[in-house]
Length: 463
Image (cartoon, rainbow, N blue to C red; front, side):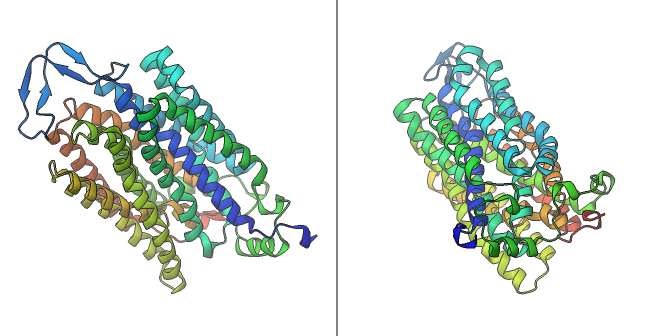
């Protein structure tokens, strides 16, 4: 009966659990970025030369000579570290499309559940595998972790298509996808604290246990479709069904219109924008801790806090921008115009911040401030880029998000290894080139989206 149903709006429960799904996913995905700075031995050589651009406390760069090791139990050069950090994205890219198809066929609940469970097991196993299997073992483990997280975004988009009324998608999208930013905040800030007090292994054990807690709650609280939920009120169910009437159940959909999807100009505009976004984001998430340690010489706890700050500000901006987007749509401003405006903010803002930070030299306050503000503006991508696949096709949101996220994540394969190649000595000038490349990619891909992008429902959504 209606009186026995839960008074809590279940779409909000889905939103909050989706938030924690992404938080857990990003914690497990990127905690290695900070941990690896303490896992690997720092190298110094007998034969040295002065780097005139080096920041205080590190006026030496390496050349050929005898290696002296400081802290860290693994001897991996920059290229090897780049391969380890990029291995996740090989699995992540491979599983995007299958994950989207599985989510559309079997529902978002179980696809996401098994994905995060796989990721959690890999996280718990990281210390053992790193010590027993070395770099090769860790690369394989990170690849499997990527396979587990491949269905993450496609599953959440399928869930949103069924649970989120269009008028609330800006806010719900901001809530759910902000989990990625909070995950980064927790991953970086708490990792620094855990490493300082318990060593690098504690990072993976603590975050693995958090993942198990989420898996348990998700299993009992969430359903793939509102009609399957035992506690949803009749009023809320009717509201969601009326608002999402264009979204069909998985057994009602005709075969996926692959030809129309793969030749869609707005979709390719979105994919290119995602490539630029991921290039900038993954460059900073994966490698900023290394820059903060090797160039700016922050301690591990300072490194964790300062590497976390951009994502805390990004989350705040994402929430604010989500409300602004819904307000603009309510004022009858074209959704396409709104999406293009905020994707531009999410591209140009970080580009300016990254570039300014790279030319701030050794001024720690300025460097941290520019990285934080610039990357904070990337929060505008949440109510724009991350929900644009839903705009184009609610019925095939999982497939579209799989294509968008999968192709975009190729940036994550390239950037860590490229950074390793470009920064063999971790000098300021080497890193400046890395940042210039990120800036150019962000700006160029944004221009393409402004020309090709759209937020109109495509004709092939309902063939």
